[in-house]
Image (cartoon, rainbow, N blue to C red):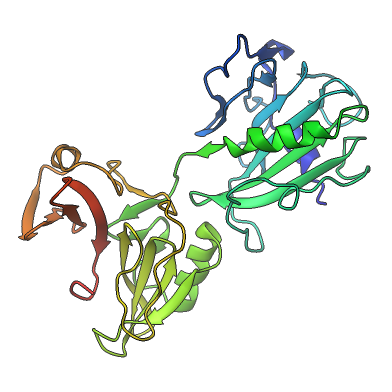
Length: 324
């Protein structure tokens, strides 16, 4: 396993070096940082995270969550400037985010953090920790993470499953926007090779590829769940973000995704996403015009399709070949 834990420890500190504890029979409000949160179970502890002034903001990765089933704190215990400590009978969860582009393709976040997806290895499994540990890399909402599970040397193995269940409550705010110029930093006009590489870095490997036979052989599509990037003559030319996946059934077109959940979770700069109401669209895009029975185009060129029965947005697109 990589030695990223030590790197992260120098990017985090605790307010007063004390942990906060969940009280009562129910989880407290969600804890975390920068839109990355978990539900803290009753009796668990967490650290208030911050980047110390002496640490450059470009340090990567950065810790977003540190939580444990026992008291957790930072102290000078021989590994880095801000190492942490927790009882040997407890388990800890650490979630790191890679903010800058790193080599390799991260897989999508698993539906659940099972023992297969996040296995525990015997020590020494990670640097700066002398107990059993495991980690899982993944992408969630276009953001790259490493989740670490650290099991105290005298902790019950069953605590590993409890920690995985805590990780299952992880939510991540989107950092990738649907824009008139493209998707996040992947702009229209890029070659298909470069655009697919950029989108793969954000969302993982494509779920399907195909041609748009309704628009001619110059048009092709690459799909990431409910997001489809369109290419004209091998150049990134448009996208559609469609509830339920790509609708075409013509030969060679991408099949509908298997998951019922909307993935990846994306939004425009004003916060409009799939499932937003038409009332929200009216507020977010005052300058818009109707271009179809249930279709509106904003002043910046983004096109929104609403479901008449629910008045909710079911498709967001830009510069696609007609309605195909």
